[in-house]
Image (spheres, rainbow over the protein chains, first blue to last red):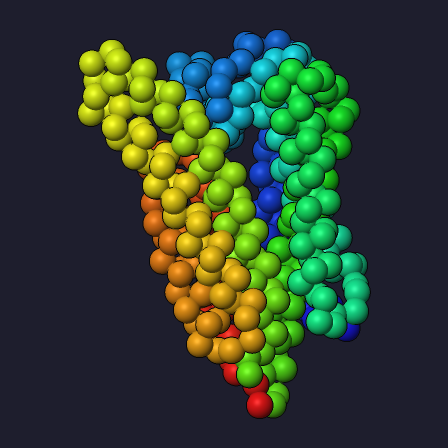
Length: 182
Length: 125
């Protein structure tokens, strides 16, 4: 079954997430060289409140979000102009993957039979398994991951998860349209 | 017979899984923080931290159960599962915002979307 058209929703979600990624990339790019200090902290805790408060809007918002969401370890974050990104490489991979996954989901076509949900669940597992294996293995000290691996696992998780969610919305809309016709 | 509830099932299941992962992580960290606060004499703060983190975890389980109800073929189960996902999605969202747990917030939003999709599903034939 071809994917039904949900262009407005797809475009809106893609735009919002793309703006978010652009803000994350723009922040270190537009700040003066070496003006953002080491932001290393813990997720779920605001560690750098005084530093972030001194940033102009909207960069203070995006760095505040990063401070709460991510550990922001300096050695695990991308940097432009000597300025650290608001989130670590793995998180940036996740956020970068979301608009990519939303766009790619319109190209994702497969036959929906009885096993439609199984295909989507397998895709979701493929999305999450690499990031879980890499994160848990590193957490237990079994190995030390590298930055390219962190980015790729994040990209897979963000991209495939968002594609699965968009495809599920497509399926629901197709089902609703079918019910309205019958 | 219901229409195809695959979309609602998948989205509420993903929401439930994200809530569960976030709940496990925050309950683990929350129990450590809560015990530390309690040991320092701030038992009120310790209890609040443990309560918020544990209730986030607990609310993920009915969402997962609800998503499996949605995957059933009869309309009554779909409605019940959707209601479970909606109610505990809201509870998860409240605790996610309260505890600043972004993964819980994302999971709760997906649970709410899945619950809404299941609830608005029209019966066919």
